[in-house]
Length: 423
Image (cartoon, rainbow, N blue to C red; front, side, top):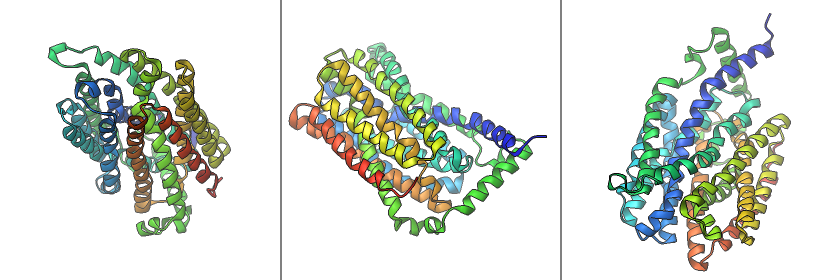
């Protein structure tokens, strides 16, 4: 006769196999469509005559609309269901990303980046909320980390894929950087259509689960939701008065400054440090992302095992501080790549333990709004990070000062994380 532990393990394994791989691929292409402008930056800055400030502003403008539309998008998800809404969003941003070659002026570049942010706004917070419908709390960090590792894997996969697409330069009279946007936008459209077929809104509707599995999962998640502290989950208005949420928002803002500074500027930074060709530089960027993927999964595993969320979050951020600080000082290309790998590993390593915190404190409409508010703060960090890099590099003609500034901001994030009253 099967024990309760065996049933839970079987059920969660089935849910993980069904959801995680597909959602991972969705997020990988979502993130790639968000940051592939970083690979194209090596070409569009010269071909279109954009300064570092213009490029940094356009790269960061995505996050303004992203922040503005996250909360309403997440609330729409609750109304229409995850399956339909996630599919609609993916099709929309795939079309917009594939339209990026139409931009020829700063204004057109800004507009398309703004619209891309509108389309992507509901995806990540929607998935974080979606996971609360499927996974109990003891698996949250590992589940989120496996999903969010797609952002680092997007760098590992995106570098050779982008390099391959750039080699199409001149085919049909089209520049390589334009093929890059089209080649990475079309898969998002196709995956969005697949989402309508493959996703299920909640366990009660999961025909691919056995009856006893559906019953166990539904009851387990309902019991956990009932235990959520009322001080954190009374209603959506109460979320705005929650001090812990605002501290988490500040931490995520500063973390986002770091990892979007890396995502959107790393090819340019590495080219300045190494002097290598553009295509070689793009391939070199896969090294930090591979390191970040491995560290992120390891940190999430041990965070779940020990339940020491705060310690793993603080440790990861301190590692990122060291990486950014060293990369601002080192001039040897290989040592700089090692430092950037440490910076990426620290920035991404903290995501699993970080996102296990808000999803345990909020529920229902409050969860949809609270998670989106925190992610909106991160979106503002994504806006400020690329612009900070552009402004400081234009002013100093070097990225060293900008990287050092990010290190200081992360030190503040480490202090805020240390003061969190959580395990």
